[in-house]
Amino acid sequence: MNNRPKGFTYTKACAMYISEYKNGVWDEGRLVQDDQLTLSALSTSLHYGQECFEGLKAYRRKDGKIQLFRVEDNAKRLQMSASHMVMPIIPVERFIDAVKRVVKANESCIPPYGFKDSLYIRPFLIGVGPNLGLRAAPEYIFAIVVSPVGCYFEGETKPVDLVVSDYDRAAPHGTGHVKVGGNYAASLLAQTLAKRAGYADCLFLDPLTHTKIEEVGAANFFGITKNNVYITPKSPSILDSITNRSLKYLAKHALGLDVVEGEIYMDHLDDIVEAGACGTAAVITPIGSITHKGHKHVFPASESMGIYTKKLYDLLTGIQFGDIEDPQGWVTVLE
Image (cartoon, rainbow, N blue to C red; front, side):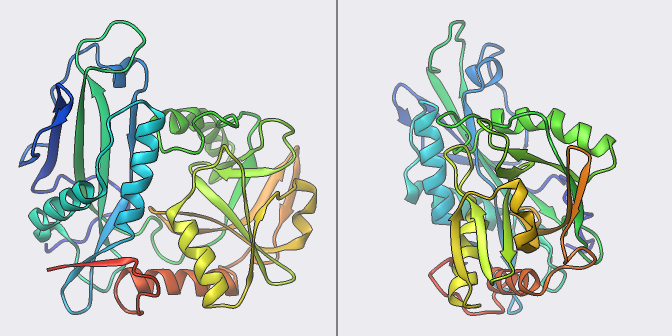
C-alpha cells in the first residue's frame, strides 16, 4: 500500500467475509471480493432494526507483523448484542477465526507502521429474508468489511467543545448497553444540531433526571479529577466501551490512579481537570469545554491534551502497535 489513508473514511479493500444462517445453522463462511450484499426488501434489519455490529482494528507493528487488539472482547460483546436482539450467537472462536481470515486476505491494505494508521474492521450481524410482521428474522447474515483508515483527527489532537443535548440517546433497560444501529440513529439529530451550532459533538445526560453525564455522541466519557481519580459514568444505558475498559486498567495499574465508575453530575464539573471521550475510532478525544443551558464550562486542560490523558493515549496506542508490552493478553499476533 503506497498511499496513506485520508482520515477515518471508507476505502474498498480486497475482500469481505460473509456467512449465512439458514434452517438453524451457520454455513462455513467465505471470502468474497465484492463489498455488496443482496437481501430481501422485507428484511428485519431494514424495517425493525434487528442488527448489531462491532468495531476493532488491525495494526502493523514495527517488525512488520500484524496484530489485533482485544478481539475476544469484541466477540463476546457481539454475542451480548445478538442475544438482546434475538439473533443467533456467533461462537467466540468462529468470530476470531473470521476476523483473522479477512485481515490476512487484506494484508496489502494494512497501512505501514509509523503513522498511527490502521485497518478498521467492522463485523456485523443482520436479520434478512422476507418477513412482514414484527418478529425475529428467519435468516441472518454475519459479515466483516474492512477499510484502511488514518487518524480520526489530522495533526495534533486538540481539545474539542461539546454542547449538552436536549434529546435522550437511550433509556435505561433498553438497548443503550448493546452495540446496535438504533442507538446511533438516535444520536444523529443531536449530533447534527450540535455541529450546526459550531460544536464538535453533543453530550447526552441521563434520561431520567438530566443531571448526570452519560455519553459523548457515540463514545464513552471520562475525566481526571483534582485528586487524581479516573472517573467514568456507570449506567444501564451506556455501552461498555472496550477502549474505556483498557483505559481504566492502564489508569490504575500503569499510572497509579484511583478508578471510579459512578455518577458524574453536571454541577460537579469543577472537580474535573481533564476530560475526554474514548472509542475505537479516535482512541481518545480530549474535551476542552461543555456548554449547558447557555453556560460554557471550560476545563483546565482546554488548550492541549492533559498530562494524564496524553499518558493514557501513548500507553494504549503503544500497546496496540506493539511498541509497549501487552499487559493482559490483549494482543493477538497473526502468523
